[in-house]
Length: 343
View 1: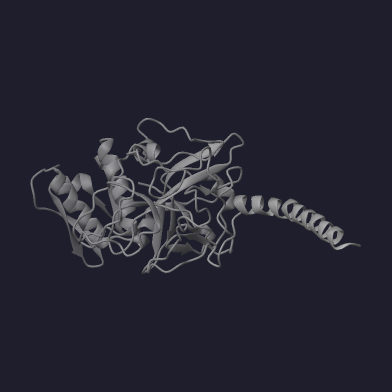
View 2: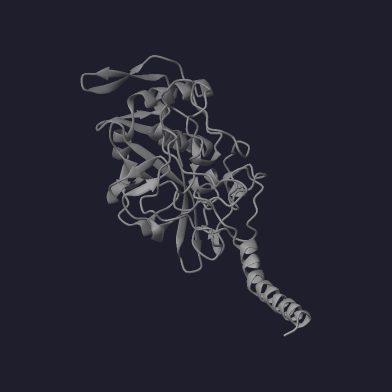
């Protein structure tokens, strides 16, 4: 072979090799564009997804090592457009909404349950929220150390003492609801097994004093139904009532399938904890999901919780609940912890 022919053959071979490399490598480059490499932290550029933390601000899991679902076709996935105008980055949360119902939409295929006009469900859905991205504050105006557990903050009043904690927040919700509906006689909370603090008697001037192991009413003031008197009554209740008393004032719900707005997950103790069902939805097959809210200690603003199992969906699906049942800042160990207040 002459030198000229050898050079020609080499050039032809090089062209063939180059063509083959383009054919082989190009599909992988497209694959990389669609599925970029992630680093050891699971981040592939852009914002780091929010982590669920416990009360100390340290990371906590969901108890099953399961990753959050972000598939719109699966439970916990976002419905429709996956973009979000909320600082939470959650597609179902809308910054423009100023009530629970307008702030948080239902998952794809689900609709909110029907609730009567004067029901607790309607009251909670229409309850005003603080602006999107608002941080949870303590009773003394300081920020709560863990700001990664909530989706939104309710405008539920919070007094200046370290009194309105978890069980007290549930009592405050019910008390505000009964004031809203003009049912003062239903604002009554157990202080012991045999004694109830009744707002109707308090506003009539009766005050509560200790009498041995129990309490009694004494006539001290004139009739007064002002906000100031109501707040004094609630402060007294908060000081002498907690998860043990809330357990007394509630009954067990035997099946998760019967869960409804206003129910609570309660573990009594010192300390115990309670979270409250504040909204519900279901799909055409009857599958249910609900939203949870809580107060906590130190006394702090009532806030809507994230779901640790679904990073992009705050709804809790009834058919996914197992025990121990983990919420962002507390684990409920007992299957019998679902209860219904009997106020």
